[in-house]
Image (cartoon, rainbow over all chains, first blue to last red; front, side, top):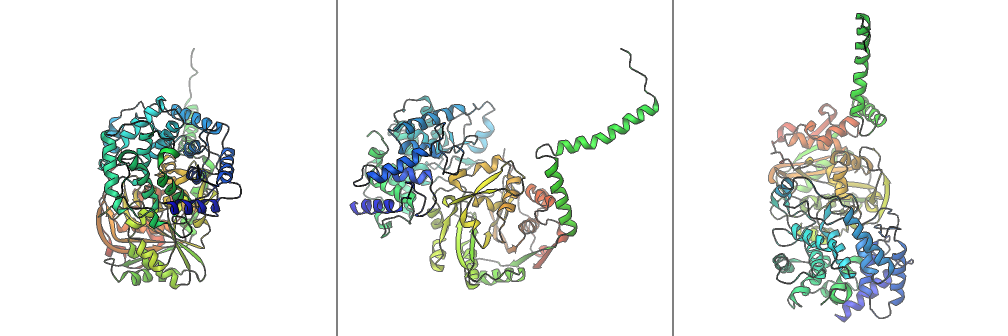
Length: 293
Length: 340
């Protein structure tokens, strides 16, 4: 475990861009998502304070006046990555500003006033449930909602009505196989398959928001993850599963380990997002994401 | 108030003016969405392409299964198309990997991908496989489930998940949708030769998903989300045509060995069709596939639109089929159910 974390940190530090940001791969263009996850992965690590400070300063510099973040510097539009930036900047004014924007964004979504039945019949969802979109003007989906709920809960706003809305939204979008996909549990009445990363994100958000163990949706999602675990070969999915399961199940010694997938350079697939997720998963979500034990 | 009495000559004049104004009003209504100027440009461009443009060539080659005959069938499909010298060039192959659902033919078969890689490597090209799933966040897990890892490892070919690639802002070329520009992956933009390898399928929103619709896979998820709903919001037919003109592949090879009918693109029924279809004009390739599947291309909005605007060729008289005549492989695919 120590080798995995140290090697992963060394890879992340070496891959940091001169201005402090990270891309999805070493030498790649800067994005907010891998930067936020790299900062979460490095948080509290030894001898990384300077790198973290540079990364946080770069990230804070990307904030728009309204509090939102684009997906990357050339992107002028607000993005779902604002929630990740808020997590990575927790405790700084920029983080609070981003949380305010997330609240305003959810409040700005028009209330669904049409007949909910056609959507319920074809897509299996309740259009009246209020989540978050990938970008303003889009429909609402699993991941941006999960990340927003997580950021708000971790930022001390667990009791905000928008967080309650987000929990209801996530429960509504859970699939018949127990997990979550991008947010369409059914299509034309046919059940859609869930995917491990979306399921891990939703479980993390629900745990952060205070949903108790034993809730039927949570139990079904944990069963989905346990069933999928043996077939996972990608560090991305494996990290999300290993991140979410212990929050409810406790440590699982039978879960496939991440370490065998780590490369000699300390990375997972040479990918910064996957490496950061793996480090966060190994450290556990409780201290890094601010989730109360 | 007393209205003046209208003479017969006056009534005739009023009628003539009304008759002259009616077509203008109809034209105004028809072009209200995008404006008269673009509408006229597309109309004239389409008519000019239809009257004076070259014919397009589409290869149709029989291949009954995914066995050892696939490489020879693929080579036979590409031979008449006059591909350029690709020695030392960067060739990007984009299969259809929207999602993997066991027992459903949702994705381009690994045997077709393998044959395409081998063909372009033998031509001296440097090959990369790239795709950005519309449904799956984890492309690495997806290519494992789709059976691509043995192919990629065996041919020593890198895989790029286009959902996470470096991006460039590209102004859209057609102006058919309300989008002014798209952020698109550099792997595709910098390719010397970009090849799309779609699956022959029906689609519950687009009627069919073939070479043109497969280009949704180049739109990056980290910017536009999953399932890339920005494109749906801006209209499926115009965004399909927009992409086909903004990032035009150099070549399309359609895996129609086993297609999908009915509830496509995910939960339809396998349909053994036994063909590979290839061409350099994506519109002509899709129109030919539509005919093989038993559809009239005019049933497919994006194909009608693309043909009318001159993005490619839809008219049967302008498409030169080489290999197997359409009539010998034509099927009658079940339509996808209508959504909402």
